[in-house]
Length: 555
Image (cartoon, rainbow, N blue to C red; front, side):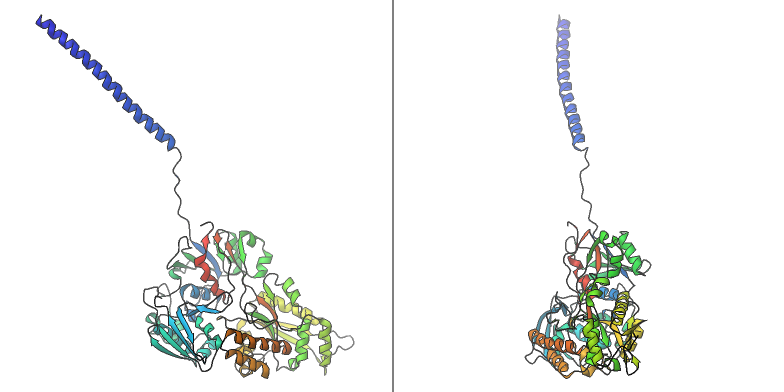
């Protein structure tokens, strides 16, 4: 009986175990199924790969022509050199959209009541790229290099600074003492400032021989990251880049304009620093590859007369040539979209610009004036004579500007219609400059441009600069001299502009030159870059100062 009880008890235990095991197994199966369901649900939800934003490529590559020969901003001559200088260095002043001076490194600028003492207080927070403060010592050092007789840069710039005395008041204050009042002095404060602690051991005469590389210490928005001579590239990085700002910026240099344009059209670069208007007209693909910008450029191109020459001593003769030139035809047939109609020797972007009563295209009036001066057409002749001498005019023009050559050739055709024979003589820029300096020319087509934004016509048109200065034409007029001196000595911009208005009227009456057109500067940028509205340019290099404001489209 006892064994029967034991057997019964074991049966019960086994039954309970079987039931319990089934419950455990059922419960466990539920857990496995839940895990599988979750896994399957996760697989379904994860079937689309999560989107991860790729970092934007903020690199901007620009094509330009001609590797810079010098990275020293005081010696910058070519557009490529001026662009590098504008990337790396700051000045006491910069130019605004009308070319007027506005503070850059300067925090305060005051002028004495007599207009002869200008005091600049530097921004105390301004720093060189190596963290050293920018001080008055740097300013005095830079100006001393330019004043030095051995300075290898712009001679006119050196002559301007030579008589000016600088005094350091404290670490951040400089006093400039001028020999006479000059309201345009602030324009010359666009001079790039060099760090004395890098260049202080060099003499002015050594500047052209200094090997400059990535060790350059600048103060501008960019510093040099790399110079790749094998690829002909200079890489810049922004010192304090804003969010989504272009960084790095690469200037890629090509040997010729066609190569640079081809690189832009092929998408190898994002922009091209300069495109002549005739290239734009000849190639519709440029407009398709990006946006073309054409800001005003301070300056003008003119036909200058040597008024010492017997042909051009009389005002009537010079006036006749102005009446014989069709500026509108020049703009339409050669410069379409590339320039604005010329009139005055004061750039159109300036608040002082006044067109004045300039001679308009009028061939009949031109012929009347020529006849008044004894230039007559003999029977069967197409060229006028006076005292047995034909009216022959050689016009010299520089060979590296196809646009000016085309304009000179068109003027040749226009003046032939009024009985004047023109011989267009194309020569190198160096030879043309030499001919102007030696006053060995009859007429010349060349351009005037200011790198400072100063309107000062004194150097170009005052009679005192006719022998060995920049007044190549030999123009001498007492009233014009008075206006030019008074404009220099004005205490306000408004007063200066009044005197320049008087000068422009004298210029229109005396015609020492025919101002043909005011140039525009053309460059192109890929549609992927948002550039905004470009400012008028005092200097082509100023264009790159806007690059920190450029963005990738949509950013």
